[in-house]
Length: 165
Image 1: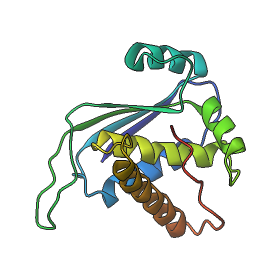
Image 2: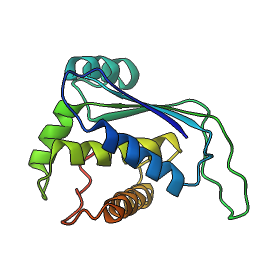
Image 3: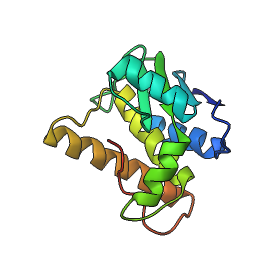
Image 4: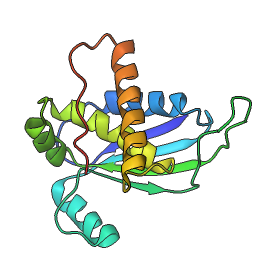
């Protein structure tokens, strides 16, 4: 799996953890090992510009996903996953830091960025949270992936609660 993490934000982030959790999420979702993903970390001003341009919403947001080949996880165990370009996930560490501090289970900016990376991956794979049943499915899957990744690394304590909008 080819995953590029490019930090253009000027804020120090744990790029290796972002890379690792993205790879874990894609593997767990059974995405073809030759698929490609790009993760870009940008500052609040750049995120606000993207948020206005693509969503017509003011202010910066935490994560945005831009799918390319609209890959989907296989639905059957013996189904071969398609190969292709997943797309781009754009993260904003300043927003992630505030969300982590304001969350019911306060957590670090890096923990929030890990959660947001999984959230972005799921959006690239076609998951959404507009309707209550979609939200339950997506956030349940997101929690399972984050918990599984943390468990494999021996990270204890509560996982970050979903704070994404």
